[in-house]
Length: 354
Image 1 (tube, helix red, strand yellow):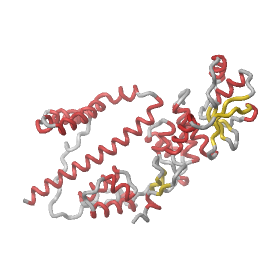
Image 2 (spheres, rainbow, N blue to C red; image 1 turned 135 degrees about the vertical axis):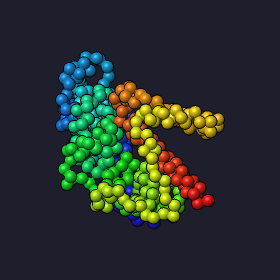
Image 3 (cartoon, rainbow, N blue to C red; image 1 turned 90 degrees about the horizontal axis):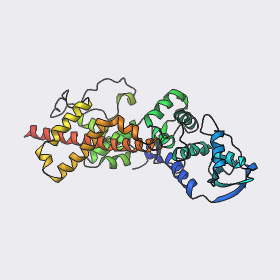
């Protein structure tokens, strides 16, 4: 039953972006501390394009404060995090520094360094993060855009743009390793076909259930379900090697109603007007579930009104996690939208058949 997972969603264990983030948290708090001679340590790279900031290192040295342990890759004795602390210790004339050793692979050292600098210490500049994405994609082209985004603190869209601009198409991996450690193909035709079969066999199954079996996200499963309801091929034309032309739906016993031009609001103004209409609807206002729905939609309306202000107030180091969270919730809302659309169509067809 699950033979397809070798192609559609193989669990690769460690080495995925979330594993690296978990490793970052352990490295900062749990790895044992040892005293190590400074002369045994080397610095070969840093996620900061401009390298060391000597003024900052001198300020650390003159502060008199105890310097937190430096993270070092044991096999190479290269500093993974703490270049300025190491320089400050040298300025103080110290012979040894406190070190936490990292025993992972050398290929993990740079992404881990970036993840740590994003989580604490002096923020990386936008240029630093962009260059970091380029380096990480060069060494880990199979990592997903969202996975890399979580490490560097940029949006998945920005990572995708950098990937398309800098990575040689010949080096594009046939699949992407997500934050959950599962590898998913760039062309999901087989997984979409399987999802369509699963939906036909069990129409009541949730988007998440189908997604777990087929190796797809809930949002993609929602698209597959919508295509089935419209009588279309579950695989988009681009993934079938065809031009993106409107598909011809299969004949149905009852034809779906045409979608009006105002079915989906195309502007924030239209969205807010639709929300204003719904919040006045007595069938929603005068029951608990309706009021709960309106409260959720009120938050969305607030985001629609003040998106720029909200984005500008998010702390720099939180932008990556917040972006990831918003994308995840957007997938959930997309699934709900397709579910509501499918229910509406079913009810209309049932009414016509009476």
